[in-house]
Image (cartoon, rainbow, N blue to C red; front, side):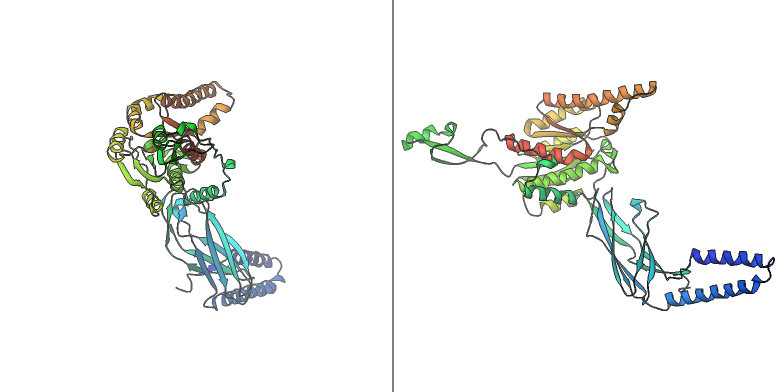
Length: 443
């Protein structure tokens, strides 16, 4: 039984048998063919036995290793490497069928290659996960056949391998490199002129030509009998909190990922940028209650804490409780902070229900509400209407798109900043807003 498990008869064998069967039938009409057909049948059996011997005589014919990264990055193309060693002393043809995790729903995966005698081959394919969590790989199956192609032998390796999928740390690395290179404009990151002075006092020093006259300290000038000026330094270590709504509204999909996944990926990047700017980064999620809280700190392990906290966050389909959010923010965040609230409002009425709580948060903190454009509505708006039903749908779509813009105006009326963006531009727009706030000294 162990010998039969890796033994597979190929289509070429059946096609050849079918051809010989047809010739046998024709030999009743042409009797001279009968002996030739019998010879062909014996030759087929002989080649089949030879093919089986060549493939199964070697104990280690093929060796395969699946090279996986330590973890997958959600929403990004992740490379999976395959190392194939051919121990046969002749050329073989292989067909690789990797048992990919069920989350990808890929049922037609196969790679076909030709391997030279006693050679090693490196292959690679990419996978794009759209869910966070654990991904379980099955067996790596390699079907090997010789030049005859009548029989195949199966080799199986790397049974049951688990790899975790984390929020998009590849994006984090990309923006890290961008920040180092200072090549930000092509990614939409703008330089904003800094206005005014920061409030963090450093020292009093003597006036020199070129100092701002507005910083003259008249009391110190009177004591020293010479012009003295106040010197300020850039404010650092300001808390930046990413607050992620994981209610039912964040389950809306876009290009395979949910709005929650986009918010998590953007939060990871903005936390890293804040730490690079010497600020404190923190994060928490909320729905019916506040969870996954990481207090804003500036330490070397902060990014790992945030990454682990966001690893298994999923929507719970409940209506988000902004009143509970306001109470927890007031109780737990005592220092004035930048609060980036990732949520989604589809209508103005939906905003008005939560507006008292948003205004309460904005009294003590700099609140930025981040919500999303409905890209499907944009396609409806731009397409010309051909029927009455299409015209009706277009008017409704324009109404909802207009309400999104009204939400921005309504928030601005109460001194609440907002970002209305598409999911694919969320990270860039959030970084832009953070840099603008820092440059203008609003926090």
